[in-house]
Length: 150
Image 1 (tube, rainbow, N blue to C red):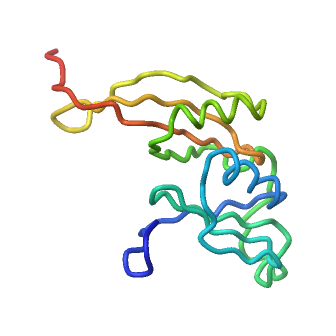
Image 2: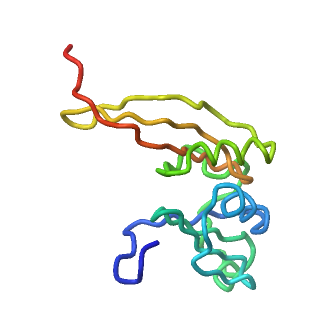
């Protein structure tokens, strides 16, 4: 978890339909902790090993009443065109918890090597959708290797 002096420079805030359902996914299954919340506003700020995300229930909170946070109609699945990559140390545990909860894996799991400059970085990864349809890519780095000759 980061402290107030080393806050991340980018923290996505996801609009959600039901904060309790979203917390059941993000906190109870994926293992995020709640840094702070405002239940009366349907808001929670979450952290997992420095990966931070905010959840905000649609239609609650003082700014929601003014309608300034949504730029167009919200249709499910929310977040089309984005996937949230989260590096995690408990990769196998997450897969097991998702299976125990009966939640389907959207894609994978797979092992993949990506060129990252003058080397390749290997990851184990899979994709899952949260209750609102946001695509979450969970991965664990498995190592680096030289880029193969072409």
